[in-house]
Length: 174
Image (cartoon, rainbow, N blue to C red; front, side, top):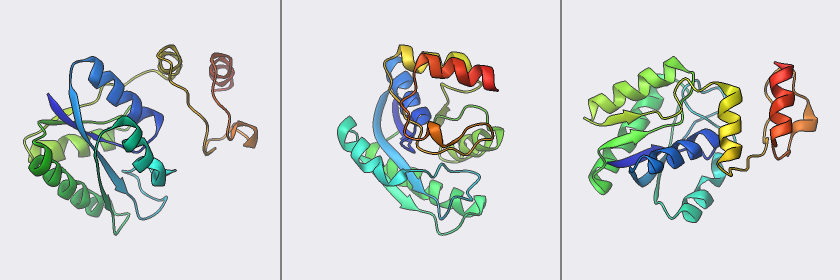
């Protein structure tokens, strides 16, 4: 199936692309929505400015839009505009996203896909953290902590390339 990918540049959206491709889907474009601020409840925000480099390195074209508001309804309008452009330019049949636990995000993405007669694919949905992190590492993904926004993690994690022993530490800490 020809898919667009909702792409933040983070490990989850990148791994969702990887899994969708392993399932035989063709990712024909990346869709990146730049939220107005870090207060978005719908969209990922850290380091979005680098997604154009990831798009180039994956050789997958990227469509972008900037949301003018952090209100979910306004972000969904921007998302809908981006989906329509992807349908028009790339003849997509569905959308893959890296949502794992947020029912709010999953419902919003699925509702928007239904509106555009697209199939929503969420290969990471309900993944358990410990096996998921190990699956990333077993699949030769390298990921680095670029922000620390969780209680229990200090600045020593910033810039750290995560290893299996780090995953074990995280599992014991939480």
